[in-house]
Length: 594
Figure 1: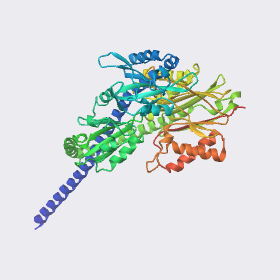
Figure 2 (figure 1 turned 120 degrees about the vertical axis):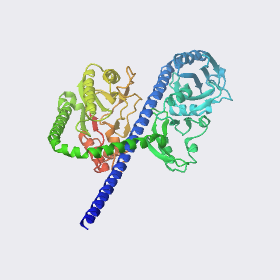
Figure 3 (figure 1 turned 90 degrees about the vertical axis):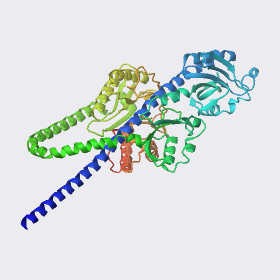
Figure 4 (figure 1 turned 180 degrees about the vertical axis):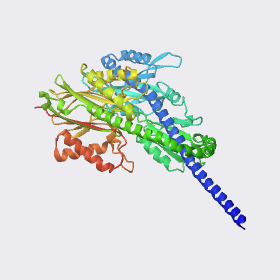
């Protein structure tokens, strides 16, 4: 009887152990499956975001080349307005010297040249055989005066990109046109100079690579018109809203709204066949209003999950077999663990020291000991998200001018902090000899490109304020636009310069603005605009502007230190204790001439 009871007990114990181990294995397998899927998902996100960034840069390279070419040609057209027949030579030279441009034309306002008729549009196009064709294509059948790109170009009064369209009169292909106003000697707009860019290169560039065999890329215009997609029958014939109208997943409409408003991110949707699809989307930089998306099937993204899980299960079983040995070795590893903890504490201490060193590199307000200090007030604040950060600012006085900058290095942590230190040192060195902000930015860019093996970049704003006149010379290299707070509030206009560290010998463009007495120049990094509350809602530029308007309404012109303190208080109320995810830097300069 005792042996029977012992055998029953042993059997029950064995079953209990087996069931317990099986449950544990199932829990571990489930957790591993989730971790594997998370890792594959993160890899897919990284691939898609990289694809979007690379294609964005490819598109920007072409668009900036076109914008530069037409900006460098408009003066020649204005100089030859009194000789309309010579304008063909101007257009021909622009087409021949810029292979990206398939055609160029001048669209004059109605009856500008009485001898030329109501419509006058000299046009030069390069044909597929390489020949150059010249023609006057303006007519009643080709009434450019009612075309969208003409009306929008005249209304904008600056360089603008048109919606994609098919040109039957000039280039005879699918085009996008960049137009810029042409002025006569009295400064009146008399014509638009336009450069046509074929969409064929765009389709080839976007679909040249795929992150998965069956994935595809889609490009839409600012109105949602399909410009690039696998189905050629949809190109320039349907909008993205029409293409997705039959989808039963309402998330597609959210994605459409995000793309139309210039948003970025990714969402998972379910097609009408019940298959899961991931859509990654981001806007194309510049003023085109275009948006690109990468569409991938979950079947392909997670195709390797099952095989991976089999390998992980085998490894898990091997791990269980080694568990006893590991326990045996645990005691002997205690000393190593203590050593590792000591090393961790040492690294933490060194990071704190590095943070103190980094903070000490920032300029001190007391360093501006000069009679010119009465001409302005300045204050800055930098709060890194980690022990060390990638944000920077600097300022100094030279030749009755205030030189200042603010920047944000891509990434976080130690690598960003090192590039931050290099950038700040370069600014201090270069601005000691160069006068123009664009020259300072160009020199910094070339220096960083030479040593930028990690392909990091820095968004940078450099300004030079003439304290005797209030003239502000500045160059914005991909940074947030500063806010001017004086009699009113408004963003300081900024050209489309790329961040430093991406391309050597980039032609950075400088700008000039007049700063009135009492005006505060408020600069900040994206740690302010992209700060999120617990609901993951970003702070945004509108809240920054609204806070500035409230400060202006209640207090008028106040000290920069108080201005930054009130902006910081408004930010803290918004995030309501949410964890800081990015470095936060603010710099305020109030112009106070005697």
